[in-house]
Length: 635
Image (cartoon, rainbow, N blue to C red; front, side):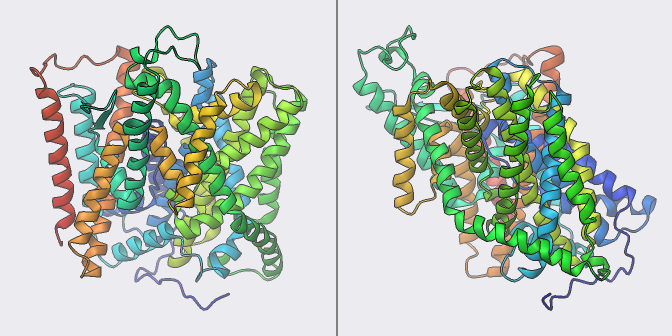
């Protein structure tokens, strides 16, 4: 092992796996996981919640210290470890499961939750043998940015720092803002502007606090690439289709009763651009995985080497900070998950025949092992938020659906089985990246790996049904695939499976999108964010870009002072995380209201003329100024 010495807290207590820490983490995980699910269903991406969870854990335990007594830095870390499992689990669920509802199936919360639990347990257990190699041996070469940042936050808090204010402020502002537009309907949530001289050319902006926070977290470069993809679709391709298709019927969709000239920009996007964007995202995901082949190969070698390291170093009893869950439990648990999938008729579908279950179990074991090792390694370099989980899911679906097609399993049972296999693998890969970051933070502060791994398992199991319940509720309230809840990643996975099993895709449009992905890669631009921008409505991308611009502005103003620049970045990230969490939690609460009482009618006030749109822009601008103001304060 290298000579690194973990942080030693002035607090000599080694309290770590306590009821208060695990309980707080489980509750935070349910709240932030549900908010992350809402965000993913709206914009097709999720964010890491480890840093805000660490900050909130410190604030909570200090606030209730007179009641529960003092808490150690290891308890803070245990709370965020337990809670952060939910966000990665939510990513796997929202990327795939909504496709079942779009197909017309109605899986229950229990079945959805079991898929999430199976994937979560498999991902956590499969990563454990890699810990000694990736976290310890490769400590100096794999920074694990979120894990390192969490450790820094916890160490600063342990030494007297306090950062929770920005998270709570963001949550409050995001929740109130969402209530004003989503419940009271005081002003429109989306504003559109037609471009003169450009047939059906239109730009728009969705004035949502969560999207502003996403843009700040992503930064200027990625947000600019995403909005560029949206501009290509909405200011380039849609006007071209409208111009050259004027007077023609919809040749790719002869069942349509409208000609292209009669279609609105949104209808052209639905019938044409969506498939171009899907091709771009799918191919960009494949490109991302191909670029990761060296990492994949190295990670698989690391996995084998990690097993040898584990076997070799377990001869002597390890010290507390190097003590994993027993390997017998790890391998036995992973094998049990595979056996459950193979023998349970409802595990990966509805009364799935035994041959499909057996092949499904083999596919899950193979793809999950590969992508868990890849995910654990990749997040060490680029972080959880940049982990190409959707690309891994696409490769899994392409491989599984192709096997099903060759075997003639192309009916509804085959579609459902292929999708749910992708769900388990996607959850496993996503949560493996999360536990890697958590184990890194634990390594830096001297936590016990075994206890962190147990906390992660508890977090995954306790949050699974709540997150799936939130997804189910949002689908019932707003309908997956609608303008309010587009579920873009799940719609893409549905498109991939249908294209392979049924061959009913307009492949010309799909390959056109793939060509765009190739071109931007050749230009040295990351193709995946560009493709996501092409695939999603431009109105979703513009507030993300505004958030990226704000971060560029506040950091540019402090570029000569690295300490101040880092301080502003941290404040903005925490505030942006709060905006996302606040809007997400309020969105789920509004969905409860919609489910039980119908859509909220608001206060019944309507602005005259275009004043509603003007007010929407002005309030959103005020929110942007608030973000600038808060992040420019030095203290």
